[in-house]
Length: 224
Image (tube, rainbow, N blue to C red; front, side, top):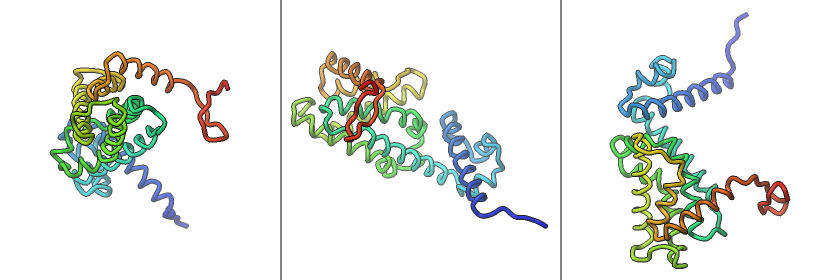
């Protein structure tokens, strides 16, 4: 008696193949922004037809990587949101939260505007831009940041600075875990250098401390 695979295992296999192709595409495009579908298929260990079964062409594959990056960025922005933080700490926390996402998808910087277009890039970055603008608005009202330019304009300038530093990491000219970038962004926003460095030291120590969620929803150290 012959048996056939049930639909659910087939769907699971298809999802696994798609995830593997995306992971390999991310790696290969990071190495070579002009990598072809054939090269990505070979690196994945599948035939070209399998890749085309999920992504009908290179634009569709790049769009899928962009959507994955967008989702990761949205999640990082949500994790970074701490309304009780002073503006300087909120901005530093935000940079540290999104740096791993930017590092993971930094190959998109070189590909984005060329292959996806400026409008799609704006859509991907919108959650981060909105979050930073809100922090800057609050910080300017408290006198924590420069007030000589509007928050959206300052946000764009800080974004360009962070992306430039990320490109330096991408090119191998520099190494950073996000800490130096956060200090640089804070000082560019108007925070004195010494204060920015102290803020990052305190925040890094805070983030390194094991924490549990208390019954009332507040954070507490495990030793409490």
